[in-house]
Image (cartoon, rainbow, N blue to C red; front, side, top):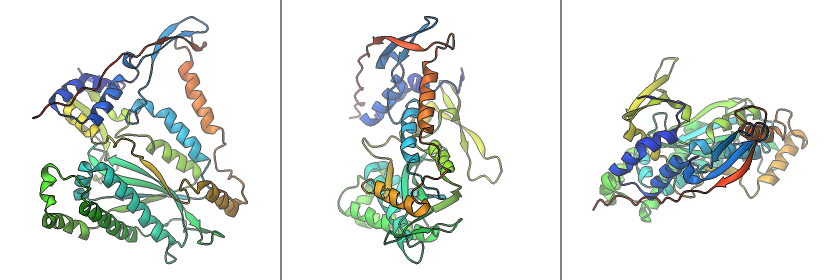
Length: 399
């Protein structure tokens, strides 16, 4: 029986997850993510009993898992993050840069996500800041944040960072705002070469320091000569750094942020159908020259779960980081200085009102609290339901 897309990822995991776990020896982190998604908004996590203040209709509302990999649990976190960011937007254009790594580096990152993701963040930011501060280019320090994505449209492992960058920056003496040209920020060719050099240097240092795990097919790389042979084509090929068209202003930045932050692997609406054997999902074929790039891909249930679990982040790893003018320690002071230079300290009229996202959050909460029966009353909590106890199953014994 084919299940329509309105049946969410959690239902798919509940039906196909047990078999997948029996067939594969999964790390504890993957087991916890699967259990969290499967348990989200079910009796396992407990909840409360609600009753309508008008018609006395009752319903049970179960708790959310709050796991950052769960598509059902991101809306409020995203709104809170957007509310903080919208206070920091400047009345200027913004640019969108993407730093990607070649396939041999991605293979290393799959086996070593924490150190390789850290190197990706650090070297892409260093390359961007170095070129931007060079007087031959912008000659100023921009503000930007980077968002780690590990997936492509087909859900395969494709680590890259998206950077949202101010269209200009503070001069070295912080007395001037230096604006970038309207439709050009920095040379992506120059960025690509510096990014490649910095990344390979940091990767070599991690290898020399014994920080990299080299299991399975990567085991031969423990030999330094094989390691050098592995990196040689990587050192010579072009690394893809590309700039998308600049945002028109702060409103467009917020629209972008709403799509890209607090999202994992795929939006639930991309799942078109599934049954006990397969899953069909929508993806965008960027290699196609046709105007209509939307395609449908069907894979087995096991393969779909495998691809989803490729994107489980290391515990505690921060996937959104801030650089340049927006470093956490100096952000408030830099923001005040930038506003003073750009508009005499006044907020741009392009910016949303300070209460816009708060109002949206309240609307979501009020909609959720409205009685589904009479549509007039408010659901009031009248009792609690204790959470059921469950334990993360031990990995399979493969000895």
